[in-house]
Length: 240
Image 1 (cartoon, helix red, strand yellow):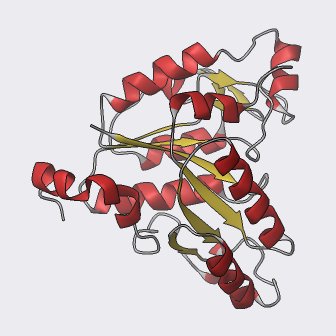
Image 2 (cartoon, one colour):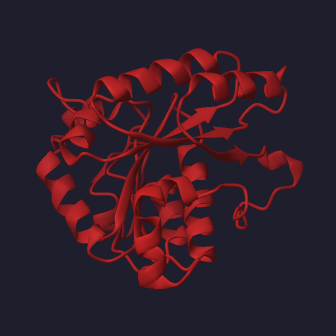
């Protein structure tokens, strides 16, 4: 059976899409069939094919299996504002049943499915619901992307605690260096290593250092994500 993970961040612009691309590239290099989903996206462009989101398109390019855009990004909105506000303005509300149906279809097609959130963990999708409510209903394990900047320790710990209070597993976390001028980066990383009792999947570099975003395999370790079914997947796929 496929493994599916929800990818959340400590804040908007923590680097969720960048982290998803790195995870997908690493999975591709190990022979996994990969798929992805960006359930909700605001800040979309109007194209002849319909509304398109840059992050969703980046995910579509990174996966190994062909996937219709509407399955990858079922709820797309033009203004770059909170999605529940954009949904109200557009008169097209976010339906969790649609998200569930799309996820079921994706899980039938690949070995690894990544679902990228929007904003942080507590993203409203209506007046009553958060996107995290849907993640909890689906019982999805979570990967936390920490945007390395001043304040990231507090943001990471609060997000981790909120996920655990929702009864979900944090499968691992990723440190993403979004601020190249961050002082005492290593000390911040070490502090989080001591405080987050889950595996560090790896560190992602600042792209301005000449890193090729098309070749991010090698920065992250997928093994903790498959620990529970590692032996079974090895027998089934012979990719390790």
